[in-house]
Image 1: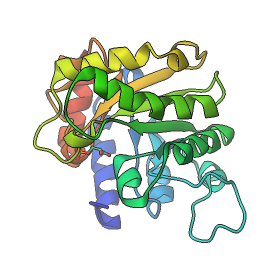
Image 2 (image 1 turned 180 degrees about the vertical axis):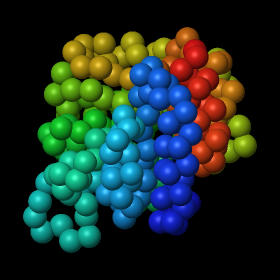
Image 3 (image 1 turned 90 degrees about the horizontal axis):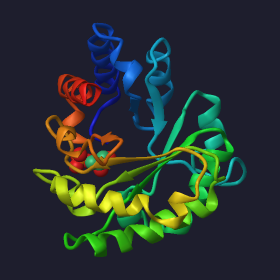
Length: 238
Ligand SMILES: O=C[C@H](O)COP(=O)(O)O
């Protein structure tokens, strides 16, 4: 909810314009934009001739029925949404979303042919082992709910690093993610599991994380299309 509808339209236009100068970037890096629900269909239309995927910031776990006010994953898939973000720290904190809710939403995304993008992360800054334990239950709940052969994206976002001045330390992030990759529920999957880092991520970060992370999940520091593009160039060259 940082952007107006007009700002979203302008942002996507500017980004598409920047990427048109070096379309080869999209051969090496998968890019997605996750706008609000209201602008999602117009973003799908704006991105139609590009390889950039559009995602939704949330969806309900049932496909249809008497759930007034909720957003159907089936309808999202129908209009061209390719990714469902779920379990964001703000959804968990403000709206009481649980691991069980996140798991049901992940299953709904997979059932409708979309990629679940599951936000995980510890609430308090501390030790790697404690962070991994907090993430473990978040990851296990989701992995138990989606078919083994579907793609899953995990967005590792330490809650304390969201909305901060700087991201979490690179060594800390790489160590937490290394241990998340070794969890049984991740190891035994046949589908792709990608792990991104989010939480004050921006230009200059991926170089420090590239040994252990598959990508970045940008918030505020991607709100300027030029900064988003710069980050994308850094990831492509890494
Ligand atoms: O959804 C985005 C993440 O919560 C990160 O936000 P941020 O980069 O503005 O801290």
